[in-house]
Length: 206
Image (cartoon, rainbow, N blue to C red; front, top):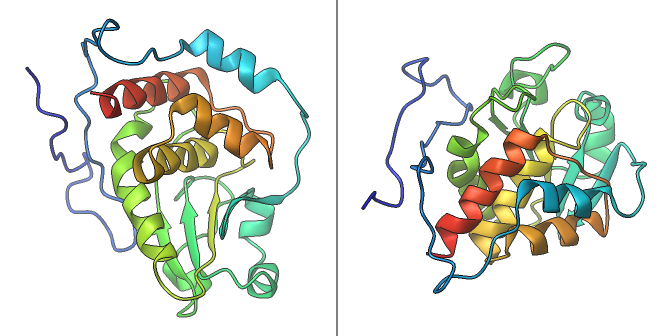
């Protein structure tokens, strides 16, 4: 039987400051006994849920108390973030094209956390689920915290990070987390990320 998860530092070796460390989940070959554990929806079933409702979004939406999902344009606008009283930024496109986010970019008034994710079905985003969920929850436990989670468009990478946060920290199922976020914002994680969220759902239900 595999342990729930093991620690693995990403291939870059020592992580640069303010960039998330990859925690590798043992989700490959995971077996779930449906007779004793709640059923987890398939990727295709999740896509049907995601297709429902509105299909247009804002640059930024509050999807959970003091947690916002946004796109690159709002994340790169420091004046807008100041007006919104954002105290923490989780950048799920750290180091990617047009992403200006860094500790130096935001300065001392904003706490920065970078995730160097590609919006590709083959990218292993799951290794950032637990570290980023812990970071977001710790931020929310501080006074007057307001957390922006963003990527390029604010529908795939950043949405997946927030879904994982709700699943890990607030015990939502993947369907419940999607439904909750969709009340406030149109999201559509790519198929690879949905597969990883399904695996997380199974892991958390063990």
